[in-house]
Length: 71
Image (cartoon, rainbow, N blue to C red):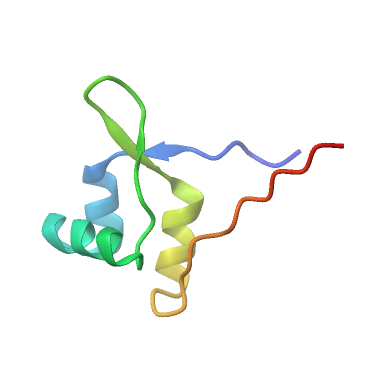
C-alpha cells in the first residue's frame, strides 16, 4: 500500500524549492508550479508529491490531469 500524500505548508515549500514567496505565486499564476489547496479557513498547503515532481524536473513539470472514471 503506498504511503499517503502529505500536505506541506509554505515554509516547507520555500525551504525545499529555494524559491521566494513571490516567485512561487507568479509560477502558480503562469501554470508552471503546483497550485495550493485550501486546508482550513485561513490555511493552504501543497501536495508533497506535486512539489517533489516539480523539484525533480521544474522545466518539464505540468499539472497531472485528473481523470474521473465511474465504473
